[in-house]
Length: 134
Image (cartoon, rainbow, N blue to C red; front, side):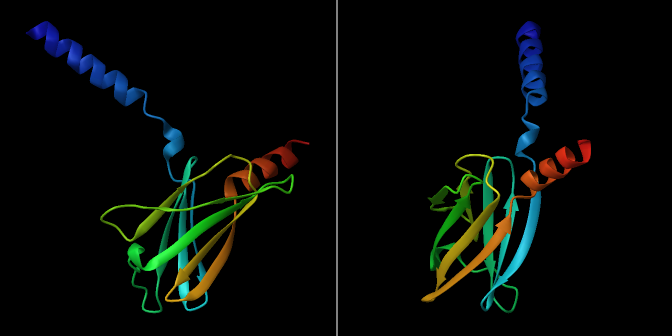
């Protein structure tokens, strides 16, 4: 029994050590879009989005139609639909491919199309570090 407990503790320790730090939040930003605010929280693999009204109240994700557009340096564009995170007022979209420079969040709220453009801060930081190294 002691041996089994020891093995389980070691497995838990190894699992905790193997956690991927790239899932940490890279950047969070809020922008105006019509009568609303679009807040994005970006990690290495996905973008979470919450929409706020004039009174700074988060809108229910069930009230919205939405997608994200990713613009890449070679001129290509990918459009991805959001997944609603159950029990929250937040959506999430998986980043299709790294390397995009800009992304747009476009939503239809009560029949009104709202949109905001965001820069990929991770790419900007990498570009700045590269430029400083030259």
